[in-house]
Image 1: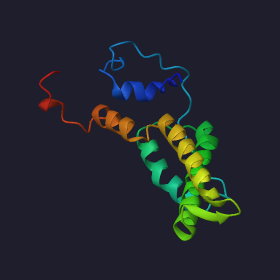
Image 2 (image 1 turned 180 degrees about the vertical axis):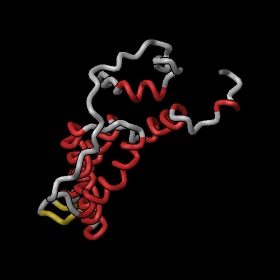
Image 3 (image 1 turned 90 degrees about the horizontal axis):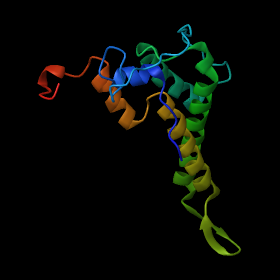
Length: 151
């Protein structure tokens, strides 16, 4: 499956500076959306709202959010809540249930797996995966470039 192109801001944070990405290619910044922090919907509750409150401040700090990202963020947070709920069900009832045909996987196992895939896919778009976090750490000024002998 082809990789989705990273947003220009992420490519610049990972890049070599002066508008270049990590491969030294110029980064086309695209349209200049107004960077306004989206607000969570009133019905976002529980673990989904907790996740919103965990990730949004960092995404705002990195200047990665716009109002139009709200639906994608809500989807990410709701998928995380589904993952947590399925995980809780597995902890209570176990991985398998007794059926006519014998032991079968608990339905929450498939729900958990699907939610995890959705969380990872959306998280990558916002730089929330471990690999993109490391790339951002190198590019947002937190890294110590003085110690890199290859610069």
